[in-house]
Image 1 (tube, rainbow, N blue to C red):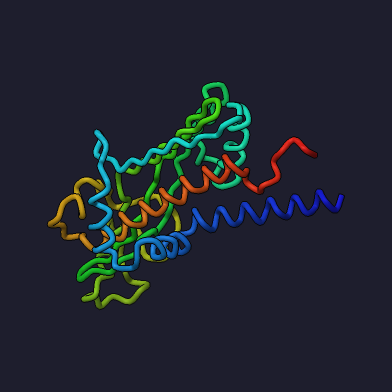
Image 2: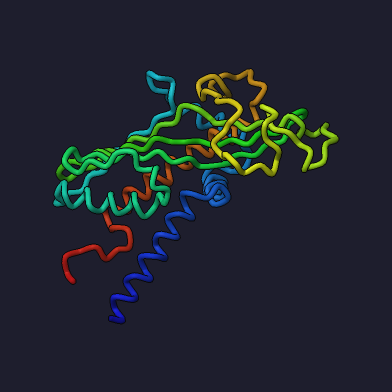
Length: 241
């Protein structure tokens, strides 16, 4: 009984750790700074030299992870466990097909960037699509983002005289404290149409940090999938029990 309790506690702690690494914007920003520095314009320009947009002008990463000796079923169980423990939103897993060996996840990371400009301030969220394809002894992970979801505070720039509770978002339907619909964005910015893929961009600073944070999240996802494949979510998912 004591051993079982310890295993349950370990599972809970591991799940909390995964969520902290992947789901909170503050932790994601620290993760990005440790790897790319906090000079977002420079970091974005450096990343642009190594990144290629796909045929749909989306930012796509793909990695094949070898898992010698593990069956398709074993890999599916491990990754299904990882996905359901990591993404608490029940709507996040949009496809979970054991027979096809495919798991698709779409989960929004809110407010990965908050930037105050001269006239406006911006809050940026992303909704990556993560596809996991599973075969005997190997897994392919594809991570895709096409747009930044933008919430613009048209009275929140450096020159604004508005008090915080008087600020109005871009469509003039929401106030700063409005919590009714966090997914109601003013607009979407296509990644391909903004810095660093377009050098002359009025939203250069906002999009620099958005690109770095999006890239950092892709690394976090790929790292966690590989860890789940090789060691399981909590490190004790074996047949010896």
